[in-house]
Length: 615
Image (cartoon, rainbow, N blue to C red; front, side, top):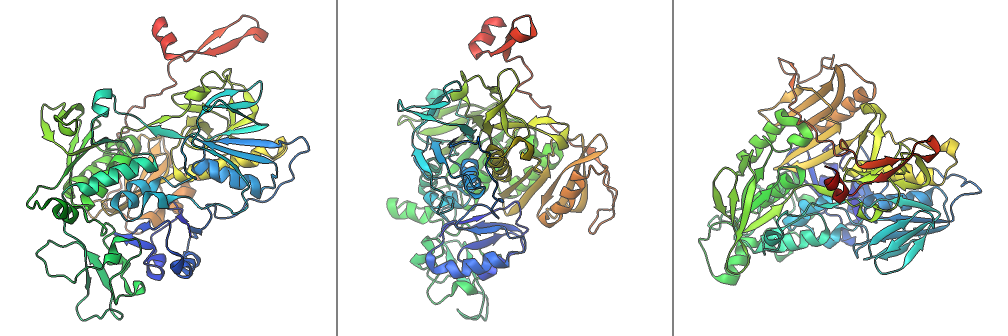
């Protein structure tokens, strides 16, 4: 059984955690963690949980909430569709194509050897040991009828001959093509340091497996998990809690079943587990394993250096702290999450990290990573003149869009991605729309009518699904029936027990105001505005309010918001959002234009070497 939860929809009602605690667990007040591959013995409980979800965010053995309506493909429609990139966007596009009635040849190509899998759990459940990385495989329709070409990279695109060229020397013909190659982790800039044992990236399933293995080998501040019942409660009548405890604390002997997802102590029914009191990192056995292997006690906890305080880096830091490891975060910006939420709300994220024991160093870069005599990570040197002994370094430096294979294709590509229109049709290098090449997911850069028609590349789970559905529909529809991609951006992040969610584009703003809740209680909603219009909202442990703000953003509501609502602060005063000055990767010229007459004018992409010669 495969389970996927659209966490952009989840509002933390927790019915699923009560009905199927073996598969769903709450962290804090609102944040949901789930097992993407629960055992078949839990199918009925999980089905009941999915049915009871008020927002219908839980899907079993499929990704989509509902099928797209079938269409009648045009008589001249494509017989062969190829999708390059078999991750979330590529898979959802393939499903949508079948749902809409496409019955031709469908090929999915990806450089990874695995079936499509979900990436968000890699920095949370998988890294903490709650699920195996291979359990993150995404569900899909049984009747997908896809020709899989996995473990082979696309290295070129021949538009004239309509072929995708592959690294194994073969090529795949197409009538219509979807580019969904996504992003990869930005590598550590120094190759010698990058080769040190103990320096990791986190983007793929293999990355998560390697990093998890190393983290579990580090000494932890925690002992093995224990299971306790509340005072006066029995194993079947009272609620239970999985908690961390110092080795000297009295405890019930843990069951070996606790080391597997969905395991429980003897005599305790999973239905009696209180999900509000479950420590989702209870599967950590790193410290006891370390002692058992080495016989060494009294060790300092292992220290992990996370370089980069964005969402991935902050989630890794959170998971490492839940494993009882010491954590340092080095972030070049004034606050973590500044690039996504601005400095004002980023300062709240900084306080949360420090409250949870993170050694957070903002405005600081890593100058060098020093290795020991055995080639293992040993010490980090910072721009503030300090240094620190570290056991593991996680480079969370953002992503690079996978467009190199398209360099000579004649499409409009660059470090910002593949440019396309609102219908997901790719632009060629001259800025003309192509008819048979489509783009979706993290690699796509498309204009958004709700935000000044700016070309936005959104690395969000929900955007990948929604854009893939639009692309699939338009690939098999007549021109008169094509849809625009007008999806409202959403994202979520789980950090230190806090559920952080956003709607709109917070960085498309000049001011921010706390509209509800209390920052000191870590339970609030902040609204963002630009030139008097509402453009975004962020909630910390108040996700239930975001659909309200979504409707206001869609209606171009004024900013500051003109409403009185519950839990409103006494002073609703906007302040500068402190959004960093954006670095527009497309600001510099990336093409050379030749010719004089309109029929002769053409653009040619310039390589970085060309740009260097012309500077």
